Image (cartoon, rainbow, N blue to C red; front, top):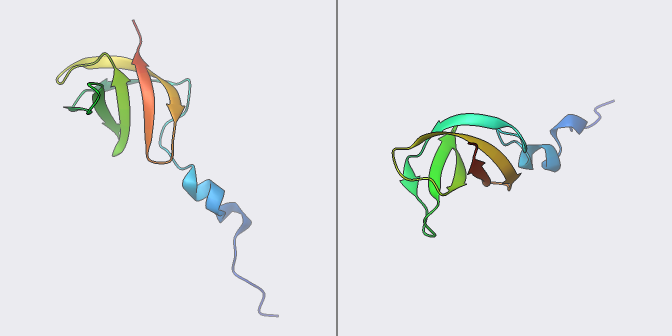
Length: 78
């Protein structure tokens, strides 16, 4: 009669993997900052992407290599 209001599509896993980007896709970004290991940092919808070999101010096309819960890794596409 009362049932639960749990929506099967709103599982912990689907919330955890809600990055606005996808592995293998390419994006045009501007490098805004540098990470502690010297990688460039770009953001898409606030989501942090570490870009190997990029410098602050670079406007580059990147390809996403892997994603984590709060950030991703990418490389410059030439």
